[in-house]
Image (cartoon, rainbow, N blue to C red; front, top):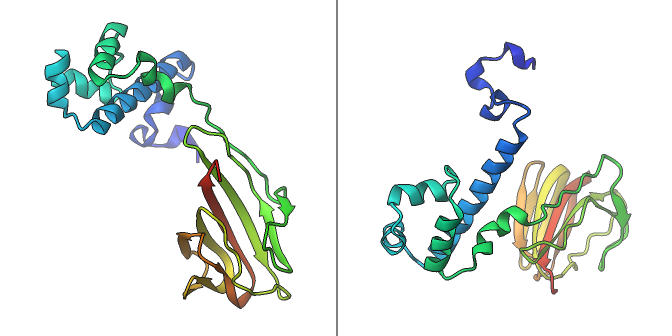
Length: 218
C-alpha cells in the first residue's frame, strides 16, 4: 500500500513524526518505562494515587501523567517517589535497561531435533529459544509435523505450560483424561505436567505450533 495515498488520519502517529527524531522517540520510551514501574510499585503496595499524592506532595494529575508516560519527571521527583515507595531510584529504570531478545527463524531453517519422549516420525523443529530474561521463564516454540507413519502414544510429560496452535490437518489430542479434537485454527493451552500428546491422527499430514514455557530453574 502506498502510504502517500492514504488518509493522513490513518497513518500511524509515529510515521507522521520527524523520521530523524530518534532521540525524542527514545526519551518517550524511557518515560513510558518509568511510568510503568511507578504504577507497578504503587499497585504492589496497594497504594492509591490519592494516597501517593498526599505522601509525596505531587498532584494527582502529575502522578497520572508520570504513570502514563506523558511527562518526563525530574530526578528530584523520582527521588521523592522512590522514598515514598521504599524502592531504590534505579528501580524505575529497570524496564528500560533490560535486554529485549528476539529470535528470527526463516522458513525451513528451524533446528530439527528430538526431545525426550519423542515418538517415531514426530518431526520437531525448534524455532527459537529465549531462556535468560528478567522474568526467569524459558520459552521454546516448536513446529511439529506428523506424517502417515507417526506413532500416536500420549506419553509426553514435562514441566511448564504448553500452548498448541493447529495449522494443518486434524488430530485428537489427549491431555490427562480428556481428548480434544483439534482442527486448523484451534488452540489448546494446558499444564504440561499431565500426560499429553496426539492420540488419533484424523487428517494427515498434520502440523501445529507448540510453545512450551517453564521456570528457568527447572
